[in-house]
Length: 168
Image (cartoon, rainbow, N blue to C red; front, side, top):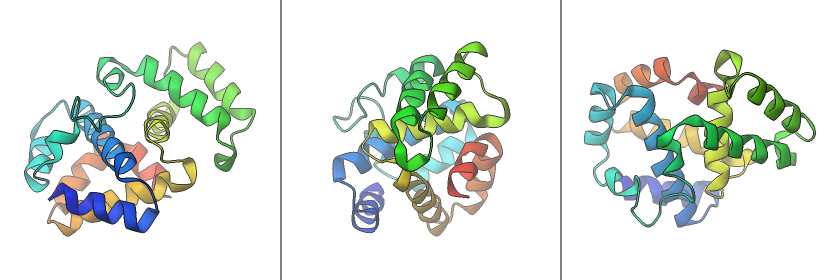
């Protein structure tokens, strides 16, 4: 069933299958970490048969994807680098400032900004630029909702406000 989402992402967003698989696996890894692998995550995985194969070591996993599970430092650093170089995100030199602020705060930015930057960085590492990141997250959320996961999404959005921040 997750293959259905991958096909939608490639056709609607014009991204490669590998980018879609890597980003989906990375996003699911972040969801697992944010939920502690609890009930919301388990219900999500039941809605998306085959999704587990995209997480960690499935060949389509993102470069450096295993770093996401070990902590936010490396991922946040990569995200700051991606933001600093993402002209379409309007970050420009601001990305360097954001990175400096993140470093000064121990990698934690106020208001979930650090998590949003981490999510954006993970997507960028998988070939989904800032111009398509919101569309990817939105498409994923619509897909889950279409499979009857509306209540699960509400739980995830409560634990991962960065998802909502990317689609606004």
